[in-house]
Image (tube, rainbow over all chains, first blue to last red; front, side):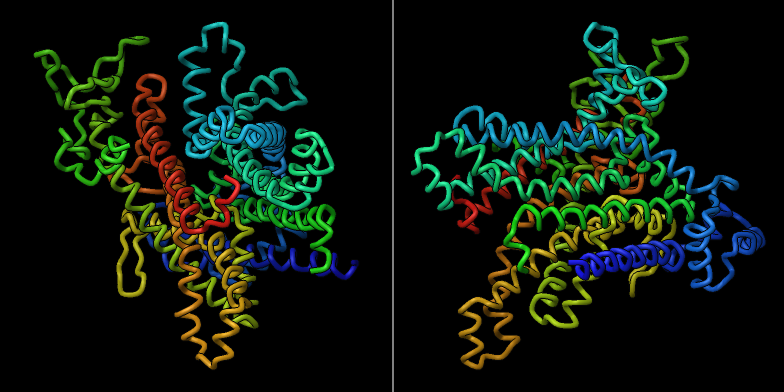
Length: 323
Length: 299
């Protein structure tokens, strides 16, 4: 067991190292990317580009640049931004993290509750009208781009119906830290949560419904029925319990990716200064140290989520332990 | 159903139905409404009356859905943009399936070292959030034109988003393909073929490829649906299709600043994306039930 955990940890480190190298190569070594030319601006003179190259240490060999960046990111922790010199990278990322975390965790609670409820209800009524309505809705939820849903929500709550009783409580776009004003924090997050959760409720609901219906074909369900258990008990205790494993796996992955910054579209639409938005802005101005930090931050959560999911699977499903 | 399909195909014959040039900006253009000429860019009626607001939906042949911030006909741009959106989604789907098939089959069929290297590579790209990877690649590729083998690809070309969207989803398809190939490789009919002394590449072509191709076909509509959403998201973040080219995503981006005054600029492409993706997903479900009857049981 210990050896398994250690090899798992080693693998995680290797994957993250690989990601940092890929990121570095994408921005430093692809044929069309000359970071110095980008920093200097579109029509900069050759001398300016050379000066920038020297100033930022971009004239050194690639592996030296990579090593220096890693050393300053992890060991001395004083890496500073290219675009905004003097801005320290690590505190900036840490400052953006709570906004993303509150967005994603709130939405995660909503989508797990909503998705499980949708899936079970649809499976219980399969073929009848509640099932059809729920599945139609979730198909729509999956089909809509999340930023568009956000825009439409903004259109209604911030503009068209903002002055009516229904939505006058919605504060202007932006993020208020929980520690500053919990009430305002909650009110400003309600619609971002709903928007982000909407897509996942559709996804999870559909998946759970299919899973439950497939489980109904299994022998142990027939046994449970033959024992004379009520339909509700069979559905909730037997079918749902075994069908929920893939949902837990998906949840782990999705949560990790979103906390790492994949909620960028929701953050941009609702003006929340989270990690996703930070990454996006860093990418736009090609702020390489910031990109490196945010990408590693994101992949850290993905890798952790992967490991946690594997561990959870071992706990839930004993059959996997043998493999 | 027919109406929906006709509407979806509209981008293909866009040239013949679009009333106005979708790329010419018409800041000073005027059109006739009820016999009166009306400027496309109207004097703002809000606030101090400074600045202009593009015309709203006229529901006539010209500017049916109104104009965007540069006085371009949104309805016409919808048609042309739809053509690009569908083209990008379709082409990137093909690229993705092709690459994923090669990687998946190579990893699953040869096993050993090749499998080890490819699987680890897939895992590594998997751990890279899709949008971050796509945005990174776009930023690097959009900046300048570059040469890909013998071809010179200019930065505004549609090939850039096609390549990016095609490549980022490769791991998600290659992984199941690899699993499928490994499963088929262990199945009795392949064992039997091997026992008969049939050569490896012949088994690959005759037995494994046909069985994998159903998996690939089932993936296609879902992947295309996913690609349409990805294209719109990238264009919305201005790292997808580059102006003056249009796509549903770029129209959404144009509509962003006009959201409160002229919501139709955003509403129309969003609805178009929704309907297209919905239909592709429904089609994908039907296709899966037909080609893969095992997953259809219990429905």
